[in-house]
Length: 203
Image 1 (tube, helix red, strand yellow):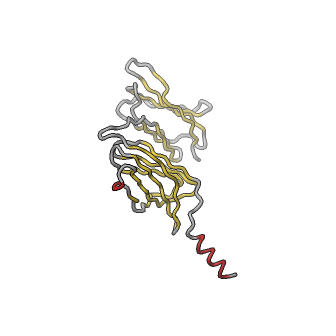
Image 2: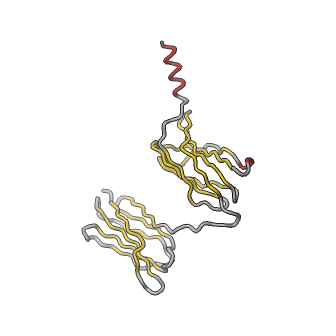
Image 3: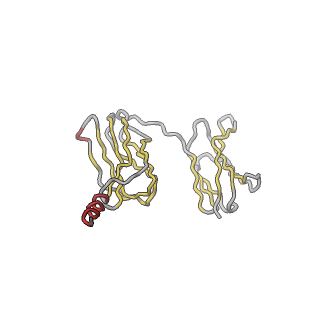
């Protein structure tokens, strides 16, 4: 009986871990793609199995990469050949156990072609300080930020900004719910709301 148990323990150590995961590709261009993944367990070691369906010479499995931090989500830009079809698998490693988080299929664009990437409005809270960044949204020449508590108090607003695409609000109220708005003005001075977000400060 003791021998049977020891054999089972040895086998379990090398079985694939049970991950609930998803993998997708974004920002696919002629020579690269960003592969994103998420899993129900935090990881920090991954490798990629890259299978080119049009040219087997372009297929490879990358060396294991150690990510900056252990997390349940991640992304990596992979360099590829133009105008080719690929299947890419994300493989995680925990100790001696490897698990395939998932596989995504994609086709790179013809040589010299690029996808137009949408502008992004991002924010980062550090305690009660709120850092913001955004891109050039089509049709707008200048931008303004507004942050206000849900009850209408503590309203703060930036001036209109054209070249600068970063801003920071400092010392917001602790443990408070805020509404954050990014507005844009076009060449005819029409003002429109671009994006609105709800945020909660720490405390």
